[in-house]
Each structure stands twice: as structure tokens, then as C-alpha cells.
Length: 67
View: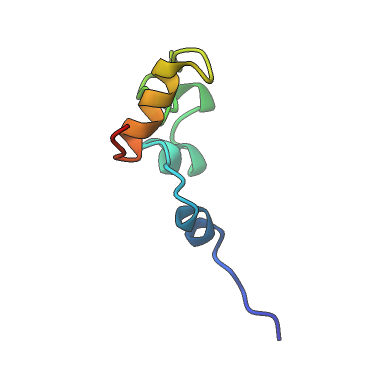
């Protein structure tokens, strides 16, 4: 018998961070365009360009890393 895995637990183990609005979106209480970005916390997202030093600094901040 195959063991059932919980996808949320699996993603969390990988260190994923979720938008604070994800549950509201998944339950249909808000639209996708109302979901705040997990990095910049804005809707719509206004993160710095992907891969830039400022973008990587946001990732480190969200994950609690000092670099």
C-alpha cells in the first residue's frame, strides 16, 4: 500500500514561503490579483528585477538569512 504524502508538508520541508493571502485565494474569498507577493508583500508584486542583488536580498530576508 502506497503511503500518502501531504503536498503542503512536502513543500514546507523544501523551505517554501507562502503568501499570507494564499488561504483566502484558495478558498475563493479573494481573486488572484489580490494575492500579495510573498517577497515584497504588495499586490500587484513590485519586486526588483529577478536575479538582481535587491531581489536576492528580499529572498534572504524572507528566509531569515544574513548575507
